[in-house]
Amino acid sequence: MSYRIKLDQKSGPPGEAQLLSGMDRFLFMVQEHRAKVLAGLVALLAVAVAIGGAVWYSHRQADEAFEINRQAMQLYIDRPADKQAQADENLKKAISLFQQVVEQHPRSPVTPMALYHLGNALVQANNLAGAIEAYKQYIADHGSNKVLLGLVYQRLGFVHLLNGDREQAVKAFSAILDVPGALNKDQAIFELGKLEESQSRPEGALARYQDLAKSYPTSPFASEAAVRIKALEVKKAPDAGAQGSVPLPVPPQTEPAK
Image (cartoon, rainbow, N blue to C red):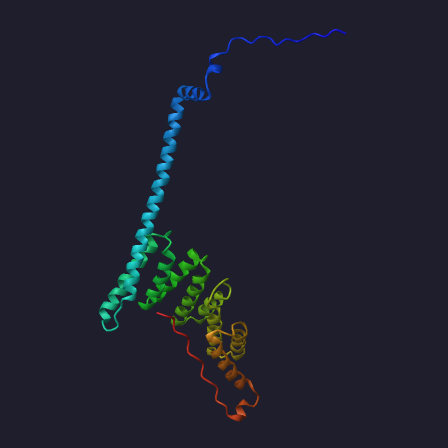
């Protein structure tokens, strides 16, 4: 059997493109499509400028909101007790500045606190309707902050009580119990117990106080709950009337902190 040796055919002379290096080819391509490349660079630069401008503007807005909120807090705190006119004027200015933060800087990191303090300031100004709206706006817009959300519900409950609406107060205090991470659930239970007592529902009040004593034994409200439990159990005893025992008065509602 004979074998043939296959010889590689000679290739022709290298073309111009083969003689170019990688960098040369890239530059050649850029030269051929320079209009498109230039347009792409311009577009990329425009995007970078837009992003940089947005970041700068955002930081500027955040700084402005922080400064306005700082001024509002200073006025809110600085209300001399011996100068009622000045105290009222400072409160009025503080409310205006808190509203400015909320309305002009809705996405600022300080806006949730500004909205919370706006509600508190409106309570001090006896604008209960405005305070309720501020607290409800916080719940709707910033409810992800669970720790502060519990305080907002608590303040809302107190304002409803000041407004004479016990039903809405019960809803607000009850809502605290459903907020994960809320630090004021013990006080919420205590307030619900007092509301039960104030509406002549001793069984409901007793259940609330017992729940408080069991769930939060180290709470400062637990000791007061223990006193109320004893008083309610005495009233509940069959021979309470024969012994002539006098029940303890219903405790007053806790005043909201100023």
